[in-house]
Length: 210
Image 1 (cartoon, helix red, strand yellow):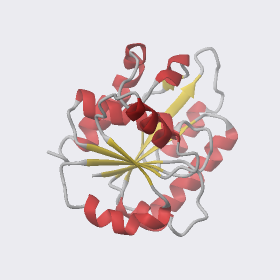
Image 2 (cartoon, one colour):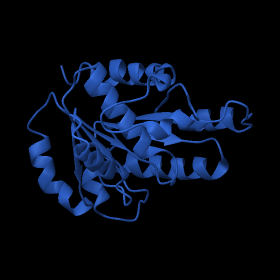
Image 3 (cartoon, rainbow, N blue to C red):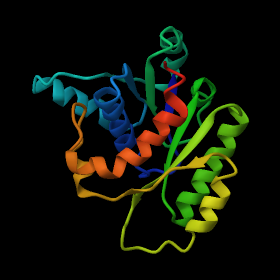
Image 4 (cartoon, one colour):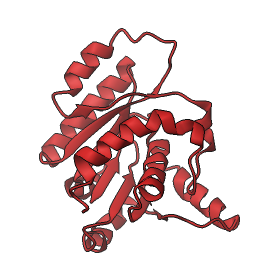
């Protein structure tokens, strides 16, 4: 199954969410996972290379790739129906190379925030996705939510996004997220990510990769 993690809005936490999900699926659900890092910064690929230098055992493979590489890679990805491919997308919509990536996805995970600019970017991302791949499921993850902030737009944003997909429980902003790498997630983070990932796994992945 191909899962893309994306949003047009930069700073939404796509790469961190990709790492968290990869660690969860491999360490907690014993899934076979490949991460394809297509983000311009390629922070996941860099973390992966640093982990290898420390001789840590890699629970999954990370591949740094450009959008133009995807069509040929997709042929190999599609062969193993039980494996999960997580694609960390670049934060843009103006590249035709995104079209085959969008079309291949069975699930799109879209982290977002409740500020106005993030909401507008998320809606645009959703509209484009729906036109290219109307059959794909979108799971919206309120991400980096500050506990002491009241979001006046939250109810309206949730109502609008519900027209495109399902909204998960929020993931609060935590300093511990900076300690995530490609072979472990800090235990202190588990209480806030388990409600989100368990629902995503049970609703969308469990039957698809069985």
